[in-house]
Length: 230
Ligand code: SF4
Image (cartoon, rainbow, N blue to C red; front, side, top):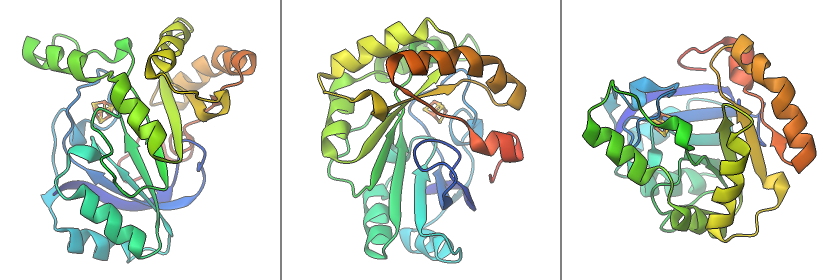
């Protein structure tokens, strides 16, 4: 499969924030979020072809016991099921970071980090109408999200640009038909600089307090800035 990067860092987002982890970033995505912070794995996918055995060997060179399969969209990478199973058999904790546009179909996973994309993710005129339509058709599939929720341990992570996004998030959760406890819903400010994150932190934190949602910082931005390999 095409791999953009494999690196050792601290998990920056979600309930495992701060945990040393090996990140395997597959290259290629079926969406084109306008604010995508990994364009080298989506808008302009790059990387090198690696076999599952090569990826596992690379992961084993690091001391971490947590592996994050991320992208791009890791669920469209050929061989992702086999990779997750092999790593799990070796005793690794597996997190899958996915926009939940592809069904889990039994993939081995200890934590599904589900990040459905809101309307504000729509790509602008840099992309042709075909891609903009595809993004809109695929980005929100409540039936697929419901399958991920039913499949095992999960967190639902939303990138929030403005307070108005809360209504959309609540509608989306209702549309899944799943009973999602507020503590499973993580709201993450949109932004790839410390300044942009701080500008949204105040009002977003207040909304989390009102609704019982979790505020999700982006630790890797605070520690390293928006750099590849972190
Ligand atoms: S789903 Fe993730 S990787 Fe794909 S375009 Fe959106 S933000 Fe980028």
